[in-house]
Each structure stands twice: as C-alpha cells, then as structure tokens.
Image 1 (cartoon, each protein chain N blue to C red):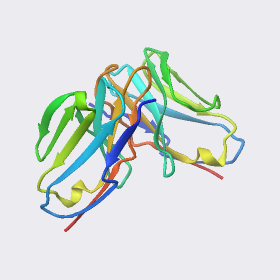
Image 2: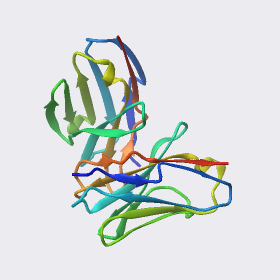
Image 3: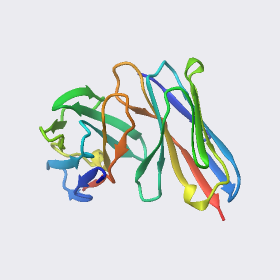
Length: 112
Length: 108
C-alpha cells in the first residue's frame, strides 16, 4: 500500500506570493490533516478534513486555507506569503477520528 | 486548549541502554499517539495508545489516562533510534496537539 504522498518536496517563494501544496492520502483513508513545523513553534495543527468537510481548524490566520476532494486528496493554500511562513508542512491521513495518523515526508517551504 | 509536556527535552545515551520518555497532558484525552521523527524529518507512528499498554519489539508504551500521563520505553537502544520523539493528543474539539518532543541521541 502506498504511503501518504506530498508534493512538491521543496518550494522557494517570495514574500507576497501564494502557494499550493498537495497531499494524497493512503488508499481508503478519508481523514486528512495538515501541520506546520518550525524550530520556534514546533508542530502545530492547521486543519483537518473528512469526506470533503473541514472538521477542525487550528489557530492560524485566514491566509491559510485548505480543501479536500471527493477522492480524499487534499490541498492547502497559503496566500500573501510572509517570511514567518517558512516551515516544513506535513500532511497526515487516517481512517477516521480516533485512528493512528500516518504522515507524508512533508513539503519544505522557504519564503525569501 | 490542552497542554502537552514532554520530558526530558534532551537525552544522550550509549548504544544498548534503556530509556523512559514521559508525556503529561492537562486534560482528558480520547486519542494519544507517539511518533518518532528521524533525522530526515519523516514522522513515523509508533503507537496509538489512549489508554493501557502496548509493545512493539524493543519499544513499549503505557498510558494512564486517569492520571494524565503516558510513558514510552525504549530498550537496548540502537543508533537508529536517534531522533525526536513526540507525544500528541486530541482533547475535546481541538485537533492533534503535539508536545515539544524529546531529542534522543544514541552514541555508538
């Protein structure tokens, strides 16, 4: 069974631009969640989707948004990028609410 | 929101040693997981353990939900065990909340 796939692996963007990250969950997993990891703040929850509906949202500004498609694939978008958005963005999938999470390898975003 | 504290923050051991990592949380949880992040950044799920005890090879974990803590035991450490170990919980309507992790270095 293929694992969680995130694309791209690396991104370099300029302040003010926007970016879209993609995540393909493990086959059969309907829950997809996103996390931001920085040296200062650690791992922080962004949002979670289940069957195309956002079920939970972390404490991030509205510039951070996401969506989930009918095939469970998910995208997250960050608009008007700031230097502080530089981070490792991790996607995880699971069967449901109280199930083990399986993470992808992440997308490392650098904002210059 | 729920608070998660992990200890110790850093741990350096010789190969073959045993270790215990602790995770304390501030409220009742219905989901607790342990992860290992390797030096390449990949997060691997070790245990899904909201309560009770589980074992997987040299690793085992125990969660005492009523006392709001979980322990991860690593026996006969190997250099490949190096990395950061995270505890993460779900409480109430919040998403997964991670602790700051324990940075483990196993020296040959």
